Image (cartoon, rainbow over all chains, first blue to last red; front, top):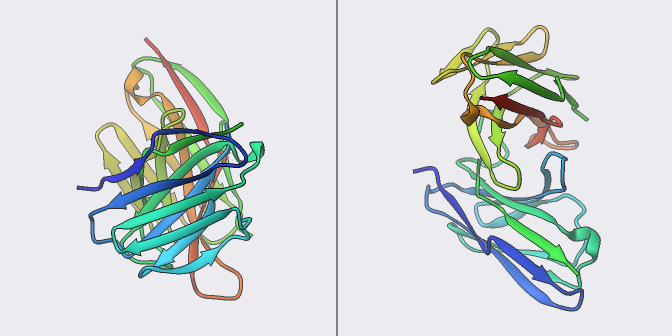
Length: 115
Length: 115
C-alpha cells in the first residue's frame, strides 16, 4: 500500500483564523514532506521531516508551522495567512530522507483558500 | 540550482495515437522521476530512473533515461482518455552546503486525449 492521506480536502479560512492540515502514512517511511503548489505551477518544497525531526525549512514564513507528532503523522499549522497563501498543499513521504533514488509518494492534497 | 525543462508544454492527441514527452536537465541526473497529476489532485508516482540507458514500463507508458544527454523521455503507446493529465518530471537536486537531496520538478506537460 502506497497511500498517503490528507485532511481536509478543502479548507476556507479567514486571515485571522488558525487551522491545521493533517497528513498520515502507514508505509513506515522515515521522511515526510510538505509542498505548496500554485495553479499551473509545479510543487515547491516547504518542509522536510527526517526521522520525526525538522531537517529542511525552505525559508517558509513563520505563519506556517509544521509538526511531526510521530513517524506516521505530519501536521501543518496555519495562522494569520495571507490571500496569496491560497494554494494546493501536498504532503508526501519517502522511505529514506535526503537520499537520491528515493521516490516520494504524495497525498491527494488540501485545497486552501484564504479570504 | 538544477533546472528541468519539459517539452512540449501541452499536447493534444487523438485517442490511439502514440506520444512522447521529454525532460532535460541542466545538471547531472542522480534520480529522475515521472509523476502524473490530475488538476487539483495529488501526484501519482509512475516511474523512477537512475542509471544511464535504463528503461522502465508500466502498462502502456515507457520511460527512458539518457544519462549523457541528461535527458529522459516518457512515451505513451496507443493513448487513451485515461492518460489525460499533467505529466511532471522530477529530479534529485543536491542541496547547497550538504549531501542531502531534494526533489525539484519541471513545469509539467498538459496532455489532452480526444476520444
